[in-house]
Length: 103
Image (cartoon, rainbow, N blue to C red; front, side, top):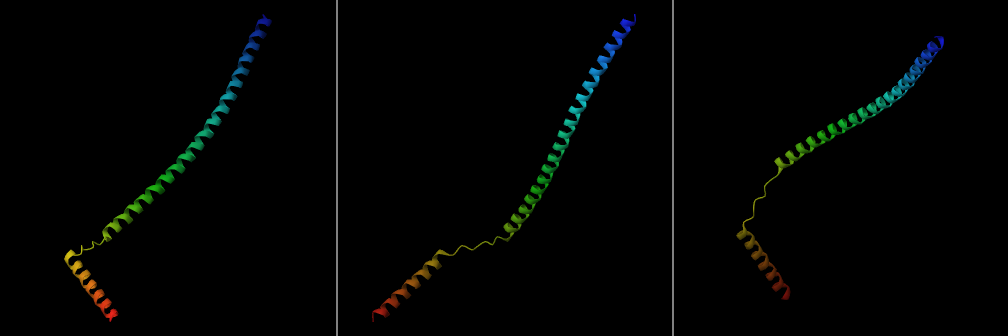
């Protein structure tokens, strides 16, 4: 009977050792996963900061664009007839100058 008890104790001890080994492995795996979670949280924080900065820049650019659009001054379209008259006057003046140079 003592032999059977010793066998049972040895089996229990082996099971305890196996469970202890499994527990150590799971703790290591858990620590690795926690490290990965921390790394991902840091990346998420950095991404969120970058997104905030880009959104701020977008809003600044939108405001600047709006101000620029408000400052646009419409240039009146020149009257074609008046422009042609000015060109005719310049041509006449140039012809007169050429005639004066020939004399």
